[in-house]
Amino acid sequence: MERDSSTDVDPLTKLNPRERARIVRIEGHEATELAGYGLYAGIEIQVKQRFPSYIVQTDEAELALEPAVARKIFVLRL
Image 1 (cartoon, one colour):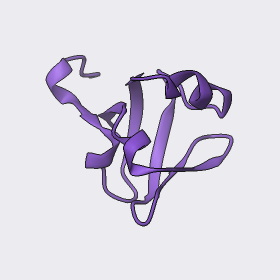
Image 2: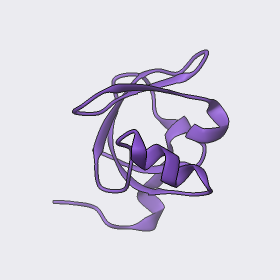
Image 3: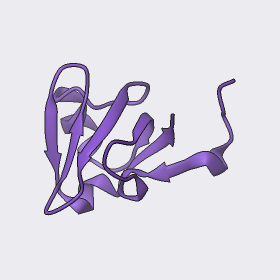
Image 4: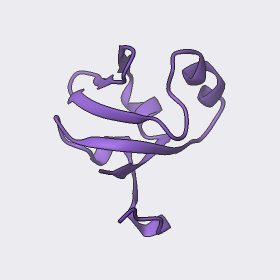
């Protein structure tokens, strides 16, 4: 059963390594740039690392994100 409550949505920074999530929204002007790298609402990601930067895995790539950017990505844990 899929959850759709907004209370289940967390910033990417709340996830731990190996956790999987689906992106719900990306706030700020970074949304357009991140879409160019394959990060957009609806895709599944997995957190690989949190420090010194966030590393996320998509089906296509691994991307490094600064904490300030990761805070603008809101996800639903899977």
